Length: 373
Image (cartoon, rainbow, N blue to C red; front, side):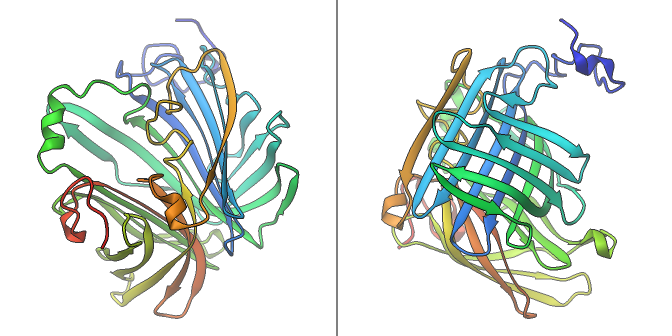
């Protein structure tokens, strides 16, 4: 157990050195996620970097949707023992001010995709409810996460197309999550196959909305029958207004899917504000990133978060995402740039993330193959 720079800090959580985590579960991970979008359908970018100590790997990606094409640049390397090294090939993350500002960059490379971007939070980072799931006797997910909404500044080079990013036009959200979730090369299903054959379903929505001086967020996950796994519905005041977090009423959702798919098209969200007044949010999709396509969030033969790709591997892939038919087969994890309008009149742009796998009876999905009429 070699020591590293992290072992100089007074931050140990176990008797081990920092290259060892407090569980031997192969699925332990630690990841940053960011997204960036304009107030239009012009650009949607999702970037991330993760470490997988028990798999001995670290990887990073950039997914950029621009003019109907989804460009994915991805890189993986062996983790080594120094977990303070947050670079992966040309990618890197730099913490500028804890819980407030970070820099995410990608240096020039042979794929002609690079960027240098700084995220500054508009309100405080907020811890989410912990998510714990089991498959039989084994914990399949046990994660902590905090999220923060903010604005971006910097520049992007997308194959010769230069994009200037300024905080007046480019919004986004980041999260930092860690714990246990399926990563790396897929494990054999074993006895868990019985669960999948007997009405398995998982439904998830994650909807952050950033207005001028406050933010709203709806996050929930459900089982196949619509019963609740976890939920969060909050209002967060901007730093300028004190950064207070308000717990809101129970969220409800009414989603319209693209016919013949499970891709989000529009939705209504319902909940009560901190004073008990009803809030209705109208959500209209204007751009889409298919995170199952190339980023590693959904396991594939070519790329999966945490999978061993050798000492260092950098590559790019490209997808047509210009129409619903082009996106068919690139689910199930969809992230949409959305226009939000409240019944109180406020309008903004943000993200609506949705995944529906297997059965979900509230929307009539009674098999893995079921789609919207």
